[in-house]
Image (cartoon, rainbow, N blue to C red; front, side, top):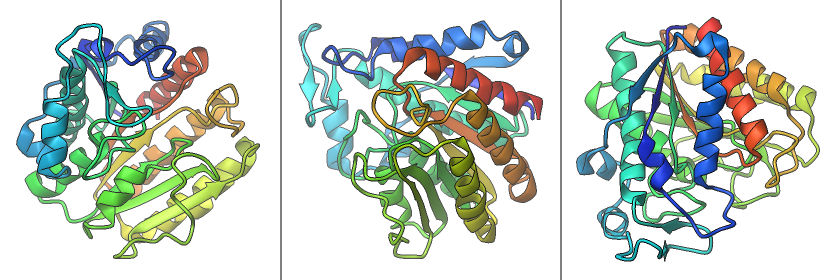
Length: 312
C-alpha cells in the first residue's frame, strides 16, 4: 500500500507527572524505530497540522473542548489533572491539536488518492476520551474526530473504527453508539481498565462489536478472534473507510496488561487490516497510535506494523 507517516514534534512537549507511563519517550521510541528500519526510509513523512475547533466539536461537547483549550497551567513545571491519570502541561494543547489534526489530515490524504495507508505517530493517545470528558491519558478522541470528518466532509456513509489496543476504546464506542454511520469494533483484554467493552455491548444501532480475550492469551488465540469474531463481524457493515486505533500494549512485555503477543502478531494484524481495507474500503486505511508502554516492544511493534502496510 502507498503509505505515509504523519507526526508532530509537539508530541514531545506534552508532559505528565513522573513516573507516568504515557511520556515523551514513547514517541521517541516509535520514531527511532522507524528511522532504524531500512524499508521505511523511502516512506513519505509529513508534519501533522492542527485540528480546528469545529473539527473537534463534531465529537466533543463544548464544555470538553473548552476544558482542554483552557487546561494548560500557567507554570511551566505544573500539571493540570482531569482525573487520576489524565493531565495537561504547558505544550499539551498543541500536542493534542496536532494529534487530532493528524488523523483528520490522514483522511484527506487518503480521500485525495495521495496515500492508501497513513500511520499517525502522535501523542497523547485518544481512544479513551469520551464525548464529554478526557480520560485514560487521552484529551481528544483522534480516531473519532477523523471518522466524523470522513462522514461530514467527504460524505461517506459507512466508516469503521477498529481498535486493537489491549484496553477497550470506550470513547470511540461512546461516539459510535450515537452515530449510525459509524461502526466500532474492538479486541481487548477483559477484565481490564476501563472496565467497559463487554461482548453484550452492541450499541444503540447494532453497530458495536466487542471481542474480549482473557489475560495470558497468546498470538494464536488472539489472531483467531481478530479474524473470526472482529473482522468477520465487521464484513457485513461494508465500510467505505477504515480507521484503526493502533495500540501495541497487547505485547507480552507491556507492563499495563497481560496479553502475550509479539511483533509477529502485529505484522499479522497489519496484513489482515490491509486486506480488509482492500476488500471493502477501496484501500482506505488510517491508523492512529494509541497505547504501548514498554519502549523497546512499542518501537519494534509499531515499525513492524507500518513496514507491513508499506509492503503489502
